[in-house]
Length: 157
Image 1 (cartoon, rainbow, N blue to C red):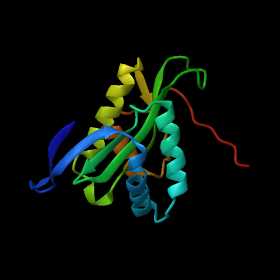
Image 2: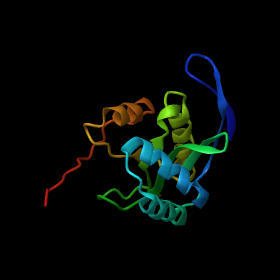
Image 3: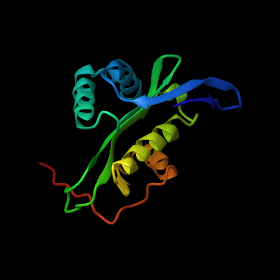
């Protein structure tokens, strides 16, 4: 899927291509993570990308502009967790290059990911966001996520 995106202020941004995740995207995802977190973690992203490709090579999505990865969403359809037997799409990891934010990349990635979830029979998608991650929380709400009728609990060890 290739479409021209408009940059903030009305200028034209490079064409954004959304495609399923491949191993060739690891370096770009690692670069985005480093720009967001300040940590270089290629081994973490190699392990995660390999997992999601093996689970469902078509589910997780990547956005490219001018041949560079500018965003990603990793997820899968699972059932039988937390007492929820229905097929559920889970959005587990996401990132958009800080220089590309506000240009619709995240929304386009979500559109592709959620369409794949629907094609796999999921009627609901879920994710978890830390309460203090206001920017991420605002984004997932903007794409239609709302509080779920389940509770996230933890015990510190």
